[in-house]
Amino acid sequence: MQKKELHISSLIVQMRAHKATPIKKSINALSGAEVITISPEGKAIVVLEAPHQRQIMEIIDSINALDGVLNTGLVYHEFETIES
Image 1 (cartoon, rainbow, N blue to C red):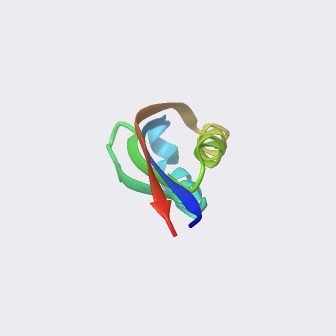
Image 2: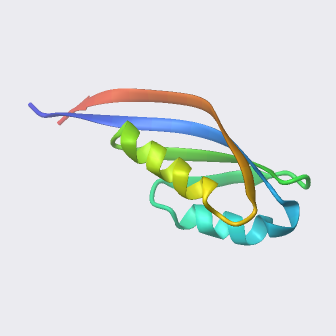
Image 3: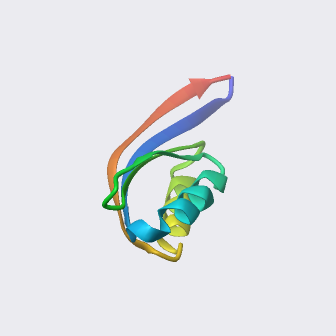
């Protein structure tokens, strides 16, 4: 049997509020990323799902590189081993 991993993380992404719409679209376009909500002040809750921790870090780096993103903070990270 082959073992695979599933990594799930949640983030708080602080952004310039006037750029929230294009940032949300860019984050949602990333594989395994979903914006759950954005406050009027520009704080977003984002959930990530990936098969490797390295991919979670790559998604976070991509989010940090978006124009208007000020800060990204990891709130939660868990992984499960899945037997297939």
